[in-house]
Image 1: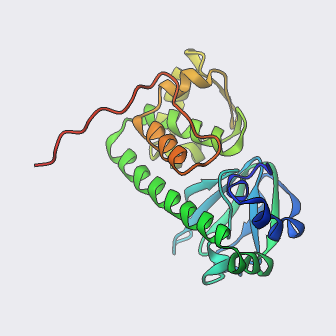
Image 2: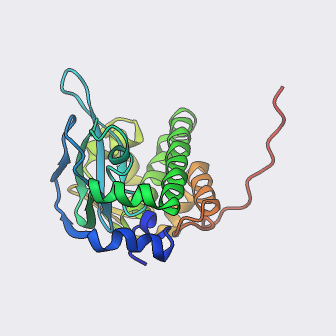
Length: 247
């Protein structure tokens, strides 16, 4: 097992097509991987830490739209498509990773049905997560979304220690910084987290998991169906109830 879920989904023979070309890299806090409009020269596979995907608007406003950790990769879609990054990719949490040149990645992609299937399934997973994220922001309370996002970042980074500013959390939870401050204080008092100066430590993962909205359980179940490592039952959760028929 390499430690990146996308790579670990490959059969040994197919992994061997790309393994000799993987180079270790450090993910340094604040480091820019790609600017909007940059050619995607490499595909990055985080092993720890987390990268932010940031949309840059015409007026220069930066909006963090998603994050990538050990469950995924950066540039793996663009390298076999248009070859250009349309987002700012920056290191949000320092860690380690592997990268391979886009040319070597395309060679492996073209010659490996297993890699193409893994990528196709992974794109399906990303689309499903994006749709669930939209539903979550529309239907669930900010404290539940806050707990879910912390657990998602824990899964992505593989660590209980998270480097996160109030501004970043407010963006990803889609609420105000003052609301984030109040929620964090309440969860800190409950012994679920410690939070100070842009650093969050998850002290009680199982307890925090029980505070998440249903979206966290839904995505864990979907990852399990897709056979992604790290999936499994959610603490304190029961099976999802039967839905009433639509009229």
